Length: 383
Image (cartoon, rainbow, N blue to C red; front, side):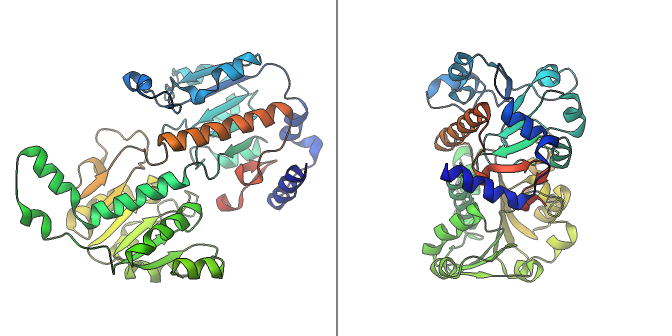
């Protein structure tokens, strides 16, 4: 009860509407009975049976099918999410809950929200709910929540790996081996140590802080820009310096890591003009969201050498089309969106999704930090 009261108190900071006017309030008191729950995940095919803990795919279905069906709920799971005739479209009019992931996102547009007459709850199995039109969801009185913290370690570790891959010019050497070549000079002329380099993170939330902590042993010069300054003790422990002005921080950086949510303010944040002001030869890691970058501006800067290396797992849109320019630009180390969907991450966000569904059925509040939209109000990071 104490935790529930604390969650309610914390969510009051997001604002609220009159209880009798809010569909969320109705949901709390009318969530009994059979519900139609739709999950949209990536398909694993032959890989599904290779690991019993592989729950983040269609076949694994977050490991909650038996639990849901034993309670009389209908659980539809698909990877087919695009176009007017896709499987997801068939279920939009009568589904109560939609679960999706950032790794294979179902784009929840205003148009889809208007069609979803029974929809009450949108859950992100993972972190980052920008695949949802949050303003439209708020206007419709829907609740949007995600499993905050579920894959922060997974993403921070992946970012550190990508920094090292770029700094050490790893991929050309790997490709040499695959192609039967051997040319040390072709790798060494642009391979560096990470020690002594200036690394700046744009955003220092849960993932950004974990990355800075992991970078400390490399003896880098650590900078961070965020809307909130760290607690002094943590800042001192990490050894990172706060930079209030983003445009003053960026030209100082040898490596830039993007750790900010995709919002109206950050969409296209790294456009041609801002990229042009970065240090020539800068390395960029982006596991946040592809749309924070101007796609063509990044490709052009990689081609000219202004960006010496770009790595990440996020694209705009996702899945990335075959002709996406980032697939073919030089000096990149891109992958599909994988950083937050390690097996450990999957188990965490599956457990968090199940917990919120259980609370939904019982009419209980979620952990306060999980809410992205509640009672018509957006969480602060999306405002």
